[in-house]
Image: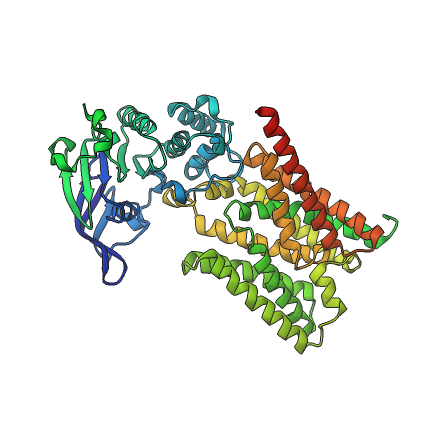
Length: 241
Length: 268
């Protein structure tokens, strides 16, 4: 079976002589739930930007569903929740307007959404537990609820690969675990290959299939239970019990 | 007031401008690019001066310069990864300097130029109205057709890019529409104040709107009302229309802020 994402001998630098990633090999199989963790500045976000074809590697190759990531032809199958700081939505935008943006690639650019697309949007909003809040302004919601709205936006595109970059930034520990349970359920029900990127991986340690630790390269790749005890994220110790 | 043909022309042109400017400005404000209109306005100033120098219609050269300037800002921002404010500063000062030099060379640093800077009720001709109506209607139709896509890019530009939405062409379209709007609006509002009509109604509507859709509709209504009220005040008080229009729009912001504060108190 063709892997969902495949990185082979990948190196990358934003400035010459200052490599962010060196000699990375990584294969993500269909229906896997993988957490990509590591310290800030370690190259996690760069790694997923390479996977999504937003950056080109200086060396090596990145493939998505067997195609060059940079020239991937079925982009509508990718769902991406960017870091909150990279996302707009500070204006009077409502939850439904945010999630509707997730149907752009499928529903076409011109005119209003069709009834079928609107139904998919409503289902995605309900799926993340915001069914009653569709017409509420995003700015009036908590950080955790706002992240749910952007996850619903990604789901509205009915993706084959869902990538979340630091989805728990600015979200309290209880909401992080609630978000993790939501992602676990969505992954099991929708069978979406999921890449969860965060410097805090404690909330998802107990639910992901694999943990990949990135620090200029991949320093650990395996099931979370095989992670050396001193590397565990202590902030969510109870979630692993 | 409407017995005078020049006022009928000013009101008809102003109606298009009053609706179009906030509709385009909406997408700039939501992307934290509120001051783009100012930078493009200064490029339009250089275009007016070039028109005088070449002996062709200053309105036409300003329109071309404004669209080119707006697309240039977007190109600098997107391709060269120049910070938005740096791209803007580059255009802002270059446009102003080029305008002064060209106008001086053409011997046009006079009252006619003043009318372009601050707007004039007397300068709108029937031909101008036809151009503004045709291009303005086309621009509004483009926004209406692509509204969902433009909002999608505003909400999450990177997410849209990942999903294969043609983000770069949509951003160039918004930049081009901004340049077009400034070129069409400058006779009524003036080059130095046209950006305010693109921004103030949008900021005001953001205070009282309950969604993106309601925000853009309210902003267009405020823009239209500001132009009509401003032109009326300018006629009776013998004032430059640009200043009167923008002060009405600023007044609307104060009213909306008070309404928002009162609503907050009621909720508590």
